[in-house]
Amino acid sequence: MTSEQWSAAVRLLWGPPAKPARGPKRGLTLEGIALAGVGIADAEGLGGVSMQRVAAELAVTKMALYRYVPGKAELVALMVEAALPDPAGLDVGLAAAAAGAVSAGGGWREQLGVWARGLYEGFRTHPWLLEATVGARVMGPRELGWMERALAALDGCGLSGAEAMDSVVLVAGHVRGIAEQERAMAGGAGGEGPDGQLVAMLGEVLRVRGDDYPALAAALGSVAEQGGQEQALLYGLERILDGLGLLVERRGR
Image (cartoon, rainbow, N blue to C red; front, side, top):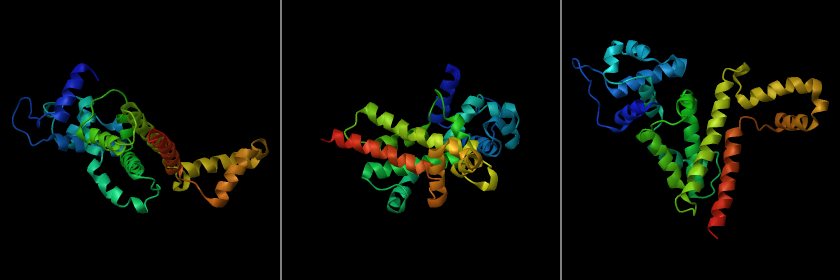
């Protein structure tokens, strides 16, 4: 973003409701504009979003749209804010944490587990968020609310501010990595998830060259016999939380 785009995004995300810069009164709202962009991105990806496309979706001219949103960078910032789930919804997940797949190992652990799964579902629902939420950019109230919830979960664990921030980045990075893999492998044969597709592809090779890779062949054989596919998100999350648990324990001594 340029400095002008940055300032405009701050005004749109954090300022009072915007009014058109000039011209007759219109029936547009920032929320409606953002949701139109979200609908296009959900169907075609972020590359399908343009000011012209959103204007056509809203049955207005592109110039009318510019009276509310200066350009695509600011439009995407509004779309991210509109597409992210409300962090307040995590409370519902916490209430059902005992029945969840992430084991309970303390209040902070339950909270981060629910937080990670909620973030993952957000990326699955709107895969273009993976592309839109990278680099230096302005974050809106909802996105900062997600960060606040994760950091608040670690409050009182004895971690420094830097350690807490890095811990949240670590968890988010794992979630993002799994979501990106799933996005890249979307539409695989038979509707399998990324783990299943990987096993299937490796199986084809190892049926011919398995003797050259005995450890890999044995591991895949175990997966086929005992299951364990499609658990990369939860397995990695558990191991990250295990490591954080050791650090929290050390800080509490």
